[in-house]
Image (cartoon, rainbow, N blue to C red; front, side, top):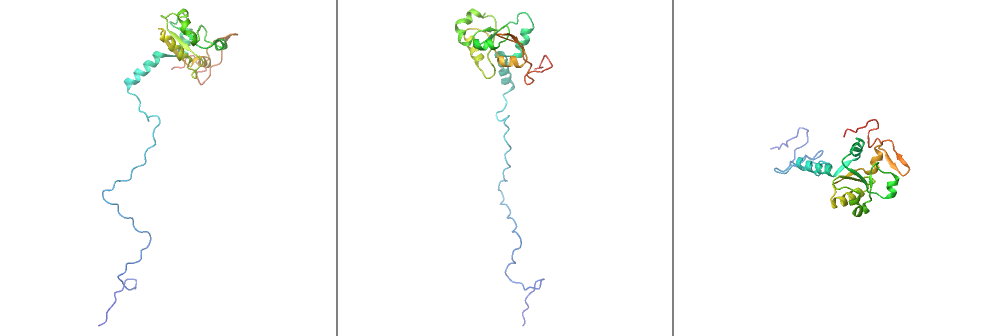
Length: 196
């Protein structure tokens, strides 16, 4: 009896050996129950890295800030209104700094002299607004502390003499009155009020 070898459609004899693999192998199916790969982390927001305070805490903070500080334009507006502004401005810098330029009508009392002279030059019933050179100087803060420790009501003028000049307000030097054009980065050039 003749044995007939089965033929494949291609005409090649069938064997028990698997056909050679062609191309890339198919990817293995993922194991059931495996976690999905984590999505890439979103970039951290530098503004909200520390969350904002609660509205109540923010209100308390900003109310306190206004109790401790006055800005240059508000001080200038109060002095320009005429009459008694209800406070006195105090320049806490050295004599050389005072001569170089100071706010008109200010009292000159360097911080180091506050302990011995504040009681003579100032009235404890009148609030004091201190200033020094500018944002890079904490002389006005130290002067305000020295006055508060001696029973004076006190605020610090933000920006100091630097921003008084940069916002275009008149000042006095040992040579007489002076004034600079307003710096457009600190005050409107063509308006009297910044709208803040």
